[in-house]
Image 1 (cartoon, rainbow, N blue to C red):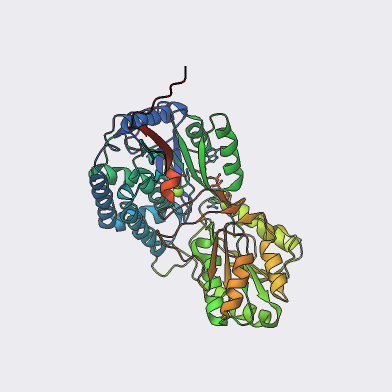
Image 2: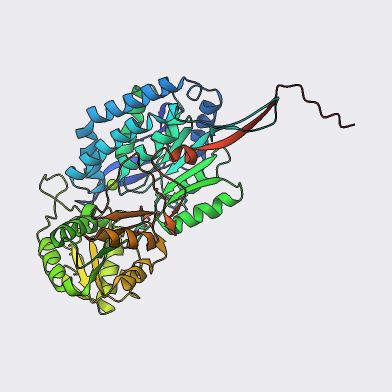
Length: 487
Ligand code: NAI
Ligand code: MG
């Protein structure tokens, strides 16, 4: 086994897989293998879950004073910030995302640890009105072991997003990050160790869907938090039914962007471009299903396409690059399939739209804009997860709302208007967990969200995620000497 294999982190130790198996992590810009990574199987997951359970139950983390846990989490944030360049570079090579994006993600990951470092001191319960001589109160307790499974579109950020709040409230964690992008998360392990997160409290097992499934099934894993596709979310829910395991899901989307004729057109074009093409469209909340009011549709299309054609697609390590390659050949093929499906169904290509060039190294797809899109086409209904926007038109508010809600997903929606009453009226009718008015993809750690319909289950971010990573215990105390005198 070459010493250069990226190892699991189990019980504070770097460990190769019990089987000795590895998998390749590929650089999407070149298609070359850049690392061999330990492939975790059920035995490795068992070792990690066992270590995590031991670390939880002996109290080496949960029984620290809340302020001490908070201090160590803030130290994680500082160390992440110190290592920004190394993490961002590693992640850009491993994921294909532009260096500007990965630097932003590292900053957001540090901010997550800073924000969630408040949680240890915010976990609270209630007392309840009751009879004299009794004290009734509730407390929120950690689940114990949290299994976290994440995709490849924001690898380091999602590792922090899941680990920081789960750890903050006192759980141990086993992370299973995406097989396409394992390298940056491996760096989080050493940072957490240096910051004083005790051995066994944060474990990382690399691997694929089978590794994730083993984590979901493991009886010592008390809670699952998953971000990824809706089909996998569904299978996790099914798998958890046997043990009645609590599951938190952040799933796919097909989010609409509704542009009313009274919108600031330049702002709407600018924001729609960002939400459609940022990270090459590989964003769950991408609002690339653009609905434009008929009166301004021609003008919007002209301006949007002109801007889309200026986007810089290229080497993720070049500071000027706005769109890197997609994460994998499989993803490039999947998005290529949608381009063909759109053309075959009769949608009109305004720019891009050609099959990916097989001569070009790397998994690139040209930013594509379709119009003459019918709401029944797959490009209007399914999550594409690539740099592909569709433009449809509507006549009035009712039609806009009907088209916007005509999806099985309910993650996010954006409204572009300068009329306050319309913004509020329409927002109240939209079936989605986050509504953005004139600011798609705006987010803060202190603001929670929750996917509706097929987009998810359970609250994320904010103080609300205390509920996601703890469960309730109520205490009934008889201190007044009450007796049952029953028999
Ligand atoms: P995926 O949902 O299959 O993978 C996400 C994570 O789940 C990975 O870590 C994977 O190893 C793990 N996983 C896969 N099967 C599992 C199972 N049965 N049990 C437990 N864990 C399992 O996503 P994938 O295949 O990478 O992408 C496919 C499509 O999914 C994309 O084209 C996109 O449409 C959608 N997707 C949506 C995301 C979102 O945030 N909404 C994120 C990633 C993908
Ligand atoms: Mg990779």
